[in-house]
Amino acid sequence: MNAEFRLPDLGEGLTEAEVVQWLVAPGDVVALNQTLAEVETAKAIVELPSPHAGVVTALHAAAGETVAVGAPLIEFDVEGADDASSAASNGGGAEEKAQPNLVGYGAAPSASGRPARRARRAVGGGAATDTAVLEAAPHDASPTVSVEVVAERPRSTPPVRAYAKRLGIDLVLVAATVGDRVITRGDVDDYASRTATTAEQVDPAPPRPRVPDDAASLRDGSRETRIPIRGVRKHTAAAMVESAFTAPHVTVFHTVDVTATMDLIASLRGDRSLSEHRIGPLAVVAKAACLALSRTPGLNARWDESAGEIVQFGYVDLGIAAATERGLIVPHIRDAESLTLTELADAVASLAVTAREGRTSPVELAGGTFSISNIGVFGIDAGTPILPPGQSGILAVGAVRRLPWEYRGEIALRQVMTLSLSFDHRIVDGAEGARFLKDVADVLEEPGRAMLLR
Image (tube, rainbow, N blue to C red; front, side):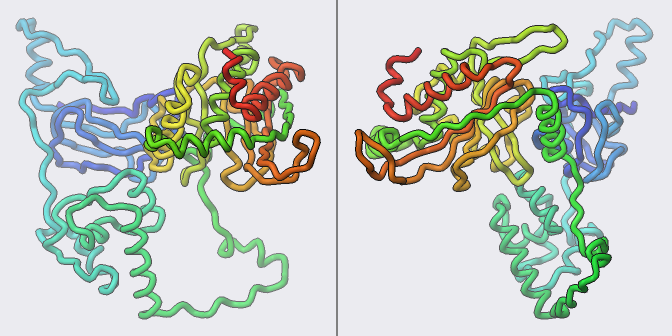
């Protein structure tokens, strides 16, 4: 019996997803919860597990195609489905099977046995497409390639596969040069550089023509790069427009002498018992913000238009803005107010690594009650951050610089940082915003003051 699997809602009411790549093909035998495909939502790359055990009969979307939630994605021939259905209809005492849950939430098997995925044929065994790819590659690009070597789909992570796809590189060719290990981004870069070098030797590119001065040439489509607006970029753009034109933004700035904080960080880094923790300025700012939010609850709140209420949160799910290859995302640290400084530092470091590798889950991106954007890592001093939708405050942390500064009645070289706080003026007035910024600054100027806050 044919069973159809439709694209489920992958979280937070997302309406569509793009198929990054299929991991099965028509004719493959799949097991329950075996990964079928990788899809990219507006927030993350997600692996879709199979809700059935059976044989794949059809794929309803190609790689790179965007599919709406609820649209058919894949079909199976499910073993035993006809027998089970007829037994149930005839009242034969067979227990009726529940419809399996989606996206790996413990679906009950709908077929007996544990069928295994059919092994991939070796490239040399008649896989015409892969053989053609290998033969078309420049010989110097993959010196160790043998049609007997690549026997199954290359092993790599979703971000690496997406990166290779953007470069137009087939991972089958890269796998032939690295052996049986997992392919890394560096392997893709090495292969790309070898390919480029070979291509230049065989067919050197002609000199670039002189750019005409006429304005019409600037509108020539062949001289432009057009990038589809989708995935994280599409979601971020929509969210920023919604926020900018819904919440009245106000931004206030405060430059702080953080010499004492930097001395504290240097001392903690020199402590061998803390050597496994990467404690930096962002972790200290995060701790200071959590302490300050307890005194200014309006900045840890959201505006509920439909209910006509301001919702204040009794916890801090702290969002940390992260710049990734797929765009800006803001994963959050749950219950950040309950974490120590070292625990916050570990959480920030883990969040950053997960975001860069493209492994941030939709759950980690959903929610958040207050956010921090570390623009200082780019050498920027200050900015006017836009509020994430559903939040009433976001703090931008500038670069730490050594500048002449008034200190105890004299001019001295001190380490200073500028804080930029944007807030929703419907919820937070200027006095409350200024008080929050002053509380954060007091902790950064004299870290011992954290002992006075709760």
